Image (tube, rainbow, N blue to C red):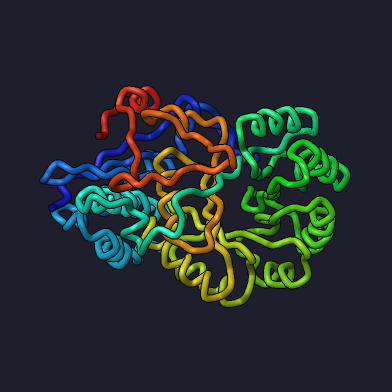
Amino acid sequence: MKITEVRVAGLRGATPEGGWSHELRPDDVVHTLLAVHTDEGLVGVGSVFTSESLVRAALEVLEPLYRGENALEPERVSEKLHQHSFWMGRGGTLTHAISGIDVALWDILGQACGQPVGRLLGGRFRDRVMPYASLLMTEPGPLTETLDQLTAQGFRAFKIGWGPFGRVGARTDEAIVSAARAAVGDDAILAVDAGGSDAFWDGDYAWALRTSRMLADHGVAWFEEALRPDALDDFVALRRSSSVPISGGEVLTRRQAFAPFLSAGAFDIVQPDTTKCGGLSEARRIGWSAQEHGVRLIPHGWNTAVGLAADLQLASALPDTYLVEYRTGSPYIDDIVTGHWTLDGAGMLTIPDAPGLGLALDPDRLARYAGGAQIL
């Protein structure tokens, strides 16, 4: 089964805010879907956390390498793309685009074998997983209202991040976290994301250590991106001194970038983003390495329906991945699929066991956010 073409569609018109200092607008394209087509009619879908123009440019470079390749060998094909393009720079646009291709090839392999991707990744340790509702921080009043609504929808785990946190003052930070804990209750999982990958983030080690003590007082499950993404030594020191688990890694790409952080003991929880770290092939290898270092993998997923589906399959195949990120209120997750994502009474999502990613995209709904493009 040979790859014949890759079609691309950037999602626009309902892009949610990202919390960035240079905030996103609804028509900004930061999520791009792609579809890998084959000569036997099977089509696999992938998601890339970057702009459509960058994905198209990357595919122009990669096209001679993937056209005609065996669509049933995702890990080998993805490694070929990495190996033959490294001289243009490991990470960034090329790696992000390969991530989407890799996810799509796993989708094709699953369809061809009649098996869910998680089983092909090594086996299904679980058939359901808890999604944590991921939302931007606001002032305590509006935040409480949103958390009340999400709790009513059935969510039992939450992550609040970015917004004013770490950007106004310690009193504001604690007021926000205290209000969030009161809203979700003592039994819910509550994580806090400082957003240290934001432009010109100035939260240093001393700030992060002080803040971690406050978060511990409120039973926070983990402290995410407390420092700039490359602050390896500070992350190691913070993890050693913090009474709250420390997480990070969403901006890192490929296993080689994660290795120093894992070997140095920088994280309690590592958070690769499947839509940019290299796809499911790389995320699985990062998960294996994390397990060897006593670190839990919980994927980062400010995402699309396709990215969420990939994370669900990954979670089924890693023994310690008990949570996935769910970007609440995004039409790119909720509106482009046939059927609905449904939480059970325990706040869990069923991991699809249909062949491939187990995802059915609605072509008409997808076209609404894809500028009319038809990629399937």
